[in-house]
Each structure stands twice: as structure tokens, then as C-alpha cells.
Image (tube, rainbow, N blue to C red; front, side, top):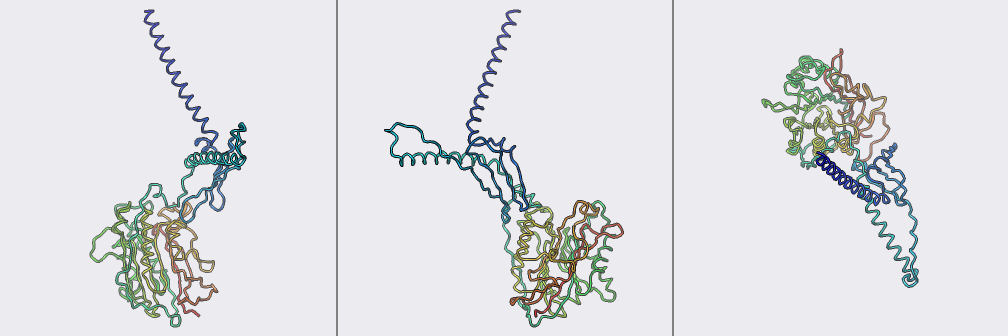
Length: 479
């Protein structure tokens, strides 16, 4: 027994000795590599924990590493946001390095002072290049991810860059006259826009009333706010909902039968589950000169929102006012709430369609665009159009100042509010009190007279999860 016990102890001691030797070798190797890297730059781990972020008012992000004992350490790194590309460009500042002292050598190998200086310069530049190369490699591990737009969650997933299909208006009439500044007749008109929320019998949101109760509130709001020459844009409307609204609006007209009409719905008899973006108007006031609807392109159908393939995304109508002969173009739209890619493609499609309009009458892009201020599609639209909400003043503004989206329980408002519904229009628009005169190239005087974000909640109940938008405009002759 004693011999067996001694044998076991010897084996244990041998195993422990081997483990200790292996551990010492690993530690020695790690210490050697760490000491080789440290004079050039802090390790990535140490640098990450020494980052000091300072954000100034201009949106610049500065990242400063703690000072290192090494003379060639980078002092600070400044990342400046590129507003157009949404990326960051880095600018690195290095400390001025003192020239290294020349090595002592005997007279035979020393050579002339010029040749010695040239050799020293070469050796220093090589050392600097090697240090910079390694430092740049280490820097790449410390570059922070770009700050994304508020609706750029898809960017984190590496979304595909899909081509925007070329769009042209088929069969657009060529007899629409350009505005003649000497013959313009004055016109005042109103635009009313509202996402009424599609009715799903099998599913209702928290706080949502059945459509049979909401339809009276939605129709009454349209009727009350529809003065002379009003055009109504609705979003997220199923066929049966549109029929219910038209029926009630025509009942309000009394003796005039079927005065209200709508464009932008699915064809009669077409049984689909999708929603519409219809444009409603009184036939005695406006004549439709052209209409066009656009659903999802093949590229958009391949995205996350393929379940929306039956939805009509864009409805364009060119109206002629019967009494004055003036024209206006209206794009009514509801963009995809899920896919950023689809929203970008839809906006580019609308811009392409707008580009095929060859006249100077006012154009509007209206509806639930499902992006907020500052998003990429917003910036893209801003280059060609004016957001009417940004043009309002104390004299032209009425109603709520924030949150076109409310929800049926008011949660959106409680959380600070969200603006995703818009009225965009031509850059030529001015406020009605503006003293700016028409430019020589202007064909007409186009003005905003009022803008309102009105109530969607009455008697404690919401008629929709969005608020209606109302805008009053005028077309007049340039003086």
C-alpha cells in the first residue's frame, strides 16, 4: 500500500510540474507580445476603456484617448459627420516627434555629413511608416459605428441597395396649357388629408372603436371642414370604408346626388384585401384631367413588406378647376411602415413621376409618409418641395403643434409625439403675408393662407390613430 501511495504522489507532482511549466510559458509569451506593442500604441482594450466622448452642438463627435508614455502616440481623433453621406471621416493629429540622435561610429564608416543626414532621414521615415501602419491597423478597431438616422434600423442588417425603377406617366395629356401670368384667375382652395386606419374585423388595436362607430366621426370631420373647392386625401382605406364615407358625404349634400367622387381606389368588382389612397372631390368644382395609381414595384415586393403588395401606394390626379381653369397636381400616398428601402424607392418613384410633368402648376405630395423630420427620404423630398408645416406662422397656424400620430390610446402623444404625415408642395409657395414679389420666371403667385393639425378625439374617443391635416392655398396672377 505504501508503494502504491508513493507512486500516486509522484505522478501528481509530475502532472503539476508540467502544468506550471506550460502556464509559465504562456504568460512569458503574452508578456513579450504585450511589451512589443505597448511602445507603439495602447492596446485596443485599454484604448476603448480610455475613450472620452464629447458631443458638441454641431453634431461632431470627438474621441480622445488618454495620453500614453510613448512619444509617438496619437493625441486625439476627431470624427466629423458627413451630412449628405451619413458617414464619418477621421482626422488624426500626431505629436511632433523629436529627431532621434545619430549613432556613434568610427571615422571610416561615418562618411560625409550630408550622406549621414540622408541615411538618418531614410531610417527615420521607415520607422515612422512602420509605426503609422501598425497604429492605423489599431485605429481601425477603435472607429465607432456611424450614427444612423432615426428610421435606419434596416441599415444595421446590411440591407440591399435596390435599383429605383424608371417611371414615366403613361398617356399624360399634352393639351394642359402652361399658366399664363396675364390670364390667371384667382382661386382659393383647401386640401384635407387624413389616415383613417384600415378596419380589421378580426383584429382591433387597443382603444380602437369598431368601424361602424368611427365612420360617423370620420365623415362628419370631412364634411365640417370641407368648404368651397375642397379636395380630400385619405390613406389606409379599404374599399368598403371608402364606399361608406362617400355615401355619407353625398347624404350631407342633400338634393345633389353623388356630388362627391373618388379616384385612386381598386377597380370596381376587384376583390382584394389591400388598402387605397383615394382622392375625393366635388364634381361640380373640379374636373379630372388625368389620374394614375402606382402599387409596389417588383423590387419592393421582394422586401420585408411583401404582405402589402395589394396596396395602392401612390395616387396622382391632375385637376382642373372648372370656374377658373387653373390646374393643380396631387400625389396622395402612404409609404411602407416596415421597410426603409421601400420608402426610399417610393419617394424616388414619386420624384420621377413628378419629373414627367411638363408644366408649372402647383404640385402637392400629401399623406402618411411614415418617416420623421431629418430622415433620408425627408431630405430627398426637401430638395424639390417645401414642407408646408415649416412655412406656417402665427397668422396661418391653427391646432396642435406636434404629433400627427396619436394612437388609439394616446400613447404616442404621452411619449412626446411623432410627425409622419405631411403636406409638401412646390418651392414657389409663399406665405400670404409675404411681401416677396413674383420673379420674372414665375407664372403665377402661389400662397399659403392657413395650416392646421386638427383633433382626432371627440367625446373621449379617437376616430383614428392619426390626426387630420388641413391647408388653405391660393393661386393668383403675378403683378
